[in-house]
Length: 265
Image (cartoon, rainbow, N blue to C red):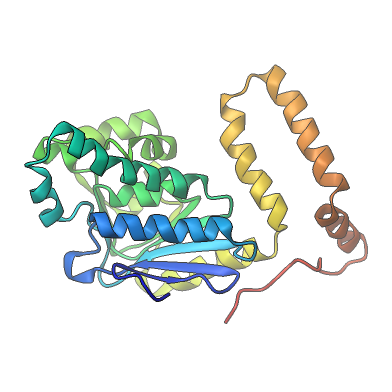
């Protein structure tokens, strides 16, 4: 899409595809990339047509975290200036995590520091065996602060203690064991494996997927007394809705629902 300089975004079809496009610095964050990625996600939020997002990186890396030149400028910032600089990154991670459609990270290469936040904030992550992962902020006296909530949600406290405190690099297979990614595949199979997830999503009810994400987000914070009425109301609303009515009719009539789609070529 025209107008972006640090990302390439195709938001024209059912499948939105965004690639971080600063391969010369391993797709590292700076304030422009954060602003542009936030803008692209806002456009997706406003779209009634987009049903799934695939996020990846151009070149050999997925995302190397913060850009060194950007970090160099921050050394002279006051607390207030640092806060103003950090909030857009926190907003970006929250926006990606709460995006009402399914999101898939296609981790084509190294994810370092903040790059792991993008991985963790997506619903599904598939990594190439070429990828490595590191939460290395402690090596320069920092912590994975803005991305922390999403990484901890993804891998849990036990694994977070290991990765946050050691800053060590781990392989794609180890990342899969810890839950940072769903699976690790050979580099040649990354695109086709991501497309399998896309195909599964496009043959599912669009409204049902949005409700499923809401369910995942809200249930862990509810008591059983709260969850009972909430879930009963949700399923009742879905059952009487057009999408579920069509889905159930298609099931009994042994045909595909009208809203079921195959991935675009």
